[in-house]
Image (cartoon, rainbow, N blue to C red; front, side, top):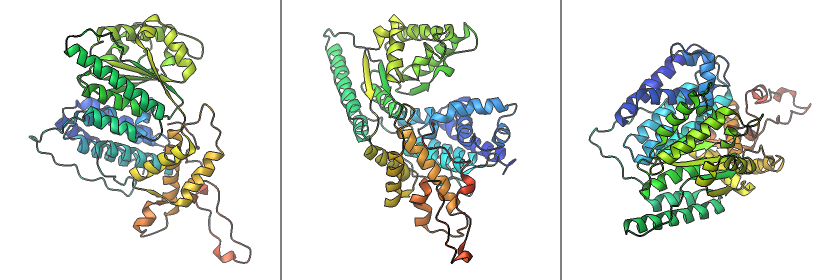
Length: 461
């Protein structure tokens, strides 16, 4: 397919920009988001950078991989713009999610796509569509994206979600019992503080900024997204969008530039929540604290003070490094007083997460497949690098790739065959070889040639 991907991606980008224009989203922002998502999905495909560059003249291979890094977080979660549209109740949220699903489908045509790309794209498209309340769309080389949804210009935006609705979404998440209790407590405190202020009563100043600590894949970003909506519904934030960044998006290559870059990022989060993942990397890298990270932190503290009435910052990372990070700057210690711990998921919770992800992508796990997943969990070390929810997503992405390979020679598969993930799709173990008494039944082992393309179990997103 090499050489065809640029045109396909360009058309998908054109459709995305058309929806973005109706939603009032700047062209450059929607284009950058679409290109990042496509790069993140196709980065394992040989030749993908060249095809991707056809959709953005002058782009280099380094631009492709930089975009892929920015877009990886959207492989299993709604993009930043889509999150804002959903939070605002925009009438264009479904159309934008479907346009992102087109981007995912186009990513499957970049370079020489692997089964891993197909799996990544299926899960990513489902995440966008689920966030907007749209039904799943099939993605892949043979799939055809659904046509854009026509929306009348005068159609009113949907009502924003209430605090009760958002708390119900929080409570519906798998596991996270301690997190749910703490968020409910925080909401109760902030609600009473707001009512006291409206009644003219004195209230202590309660910091709204939060520290999330836990291992990767424990739901920190998902909860941060809900917190942003809850704070908006409480009237504490004017917009309620979530802007998710890491060190690379705050620190520049030269002193002086970092302050400007950090200030610009904070400005984009004004009215909502700025979520900084692995925030400890700003003050303690592999070789200790550096002046670039300190400049970013100093700027962040100043911006938090200047925008204290309409900005919430959530910093996240491993427990021990985050404690060191908060203690590294007096300004941070005075502003981050509430820490919420995210526990690892149990086997039952991970099985529930895997089932939910599969259903969201319009797949069904057979009982044997769920049993196989539990076997995989039992054999997987639960060390610091274990991906939790990301582990479940990676397993599903790989299974979708193997499922497609298993059906490669089926001319007209049934709906059940298209939907069912079987136990054999969850492992690279070869099927039993035919006995010597039946040599005529010998056939190639399915999936053997794909092993180099499939993600390792527990591979980080």
